Length: 338
View 1 (cartoon, rainbow, N blue to C red):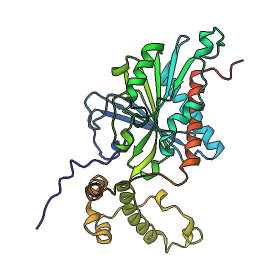
View 2 (cartoon, helix red, strand yellow):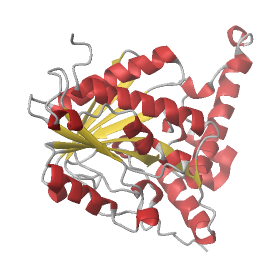
View 3 (cartoon, rainbow, N blue to C red):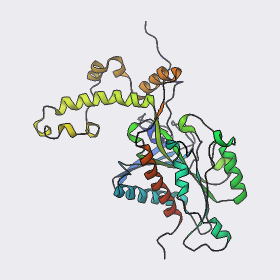
View 4 (cartoon, helix red, strand yellow):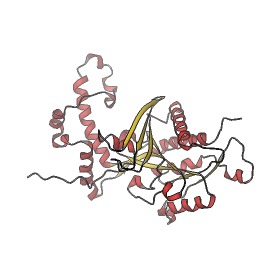
């Protein structure tokens, strides 16, 4: 007996606009373009009020890179991110910024925000003392913690601080979730639409945005976790890609010397739907969205849809926080000015 499963009510979590634009070929209210800058893929997505991504109107800029543990790559990402932030912030001499690090410093995948704030150049106290140099702007920063520790809604803490010190703009840093293993810790999203704290783990709190605070809010996020459904989905796809790669390249004499060291995910491989179905059965007939939502239906009710992070997260999160803090400092202050 054939029985259709209603997949519409099962949504795999993602905070990245770029994850969603890849799912459909035609999108209403969505404009996007991609460029490569110093080997870094920069995708800009602009959304109208009504759009097929069901996200807020605004601009979403995504940086995709290979690695930030290498010094040269880290500097490249920092330079690109700095330039992106300068364009979005459009600061003047009277600009006063508040930098907020969302997250829990006791949980490594969620500690990005607090780690970034630790390295922000704070100057508001110097401004108050009339000792601020011309090449630095007013900047204050806070780590408001998480509601589970403080018992206070994060947005209420931020709202109170904004009303008291009256900054002209807000920069919020938070850890995100993605629908792709490949983007884990290798993607930075910048948006002018604000943020929902905790959305990456499905624990949405009150919005932090222009609408709630009355000042521009720039959100910077990095996907540090993925659902177990994402890992299983990608693994199923990798099985077919590995099979297709072996079939195409195994008997190629030119490939034999490097065959075992080749990353088959970077190879252009044509997908044969019939062949994929023969290899994977009925699962092979599902697209990524259908497969993820089906797996979500299977794993979530039994509590096995775990949030997963890479084993090297301790090391990588420090490098990522360094990139973001340095980019924020460079975009706000004229650090190289004598």
